[in-house]
Length: 258
Image: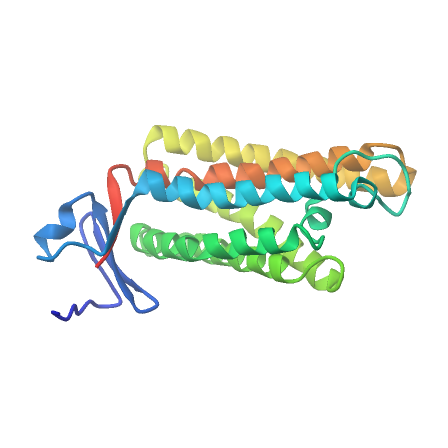
């Protein structure tokens, strides 16, 4: 079998070559890799399909975690220190039960490698500037903090979980802002529109989460924490929608394992 020798990173117009772990990868217009490499790739996946797969994993993980936690122990899932009525658990509670933790961890860990590949692709796409580096750094911190809050559950490692979740929220919003500020001249209009709406939605969700969390702790009113949890879930979904624009940034592209 012939040996493929690729540099760690090279870029030639629309084609990006990279090595993830020990796997040489090619990312470019669908079918264009055959011009450079005579053999067929071991695996080829289009940008829209890759995006759908990656974004569906945390979405399904969130839906299953909330649903299962409510079904298996509704009282425990919706309990707070105030002991008032609620109908929706927070994400931290939903992903920490013995039933949901394996599901959440499996799906989040499974979606991580493609996210790192996307990081490498954006690294080659963005121009070398301070703002681009900050955008990529915030993206990397977002991924790592998501993995961290997944590893540290809110029951046995509460402080680490809180720090990880807070870091995730701040870094994700920062990344959205920086990303939208540098790609306006690089990406298509529909992608930019979705990115901006996701950013606005995320900021609003964080704002309402902050207010509702304070109100819940100050007044201990029924169902206030449930509304807080709802906006927390919407924040995560807004983040997923933002990252789903990868398919629009790179239309008619494919990722090929060589």
